[in-house]
Length: 186
Image 1: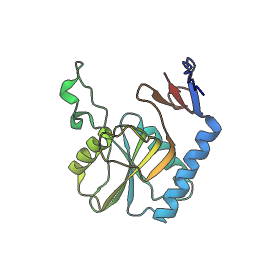
Image 2: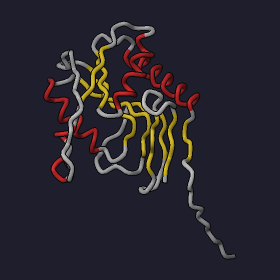
Image 3: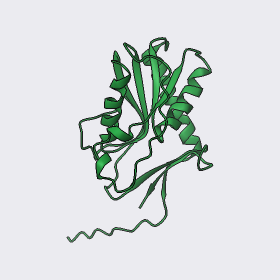
Image 4: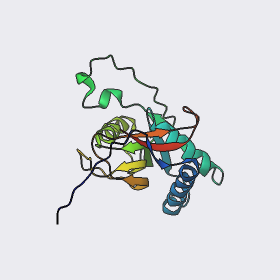
């Protein structure tokens, strides 16, 4: 018996999460955070620039509905990246806004997509310039499981997907693109 595999080229983006599923995923992540931290007195939330800030803003807005002790900030990692000097274009850093001490705090780092792990490594290096946290946890909206270059794993995951290297995962936010959804694009 002969088996033939036919691969069909995908021209249209494949929707992984639509707006409703996107919203449910964010709420589920909030429940997980609340279960693990009970109150957030010693916890701070930091979104990694540029797109992790949207995850952080949404999660913190949902958590603030039941807890006013939420402290959030944003972290730019431009000059901590290991490919910083390899880029042809001039790097323009995004603003970092950490208006609280991270010393001895539980820090929840947030990003939209975890791919190779290099962004998270850079964020950990940058974070140490603001103090020594008691603990650092990672929350990502999308975990591309099988593409790591570094041994980094999230503590909280919205959705874990298997993709081939040539695929691009695109998280669209209503704040910037007018709709909440996650797509795989060829």
